Image (tube, rainbow, N blue to C red; front, side):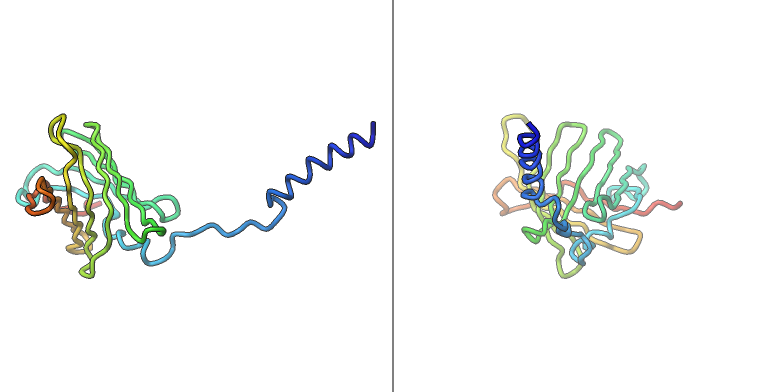
Length: 177
């Protein structure tokens, strides 16, 4: 009986070593390269207004760096809706990805890169305006205007990108604390 118990115990130990649990763990990827900091100009607590209405009551957007600097998260609060986005640099594609969800059930997905002028330019699609219509091609650009101001311009196209119309033109101003 003692030998059978020893054989069973040794059978349990072998899989532990086979799984590499006894070996030195490999280093996990880190988000500390310069490409991960390209969108940091958007981080902060912001008052947001339409570009052509600088005296309008502000909407609110709080953008934070999370998960060891790998994720930029936005929490948006407007007069009629709320929403949030998760932004990440996808090292496997060499591009930024943004997923936006909101209190209307909207799902927006974008892929983008940093342009030579420092702006972040995304392309993607957004939900149709009316049931039964297809998703709408969209491009969205974030322009760092100063250390305390960012412009977000979103445009859509219903003809495959031949013509574009402005959906949103917003100015983010850092909140005075």
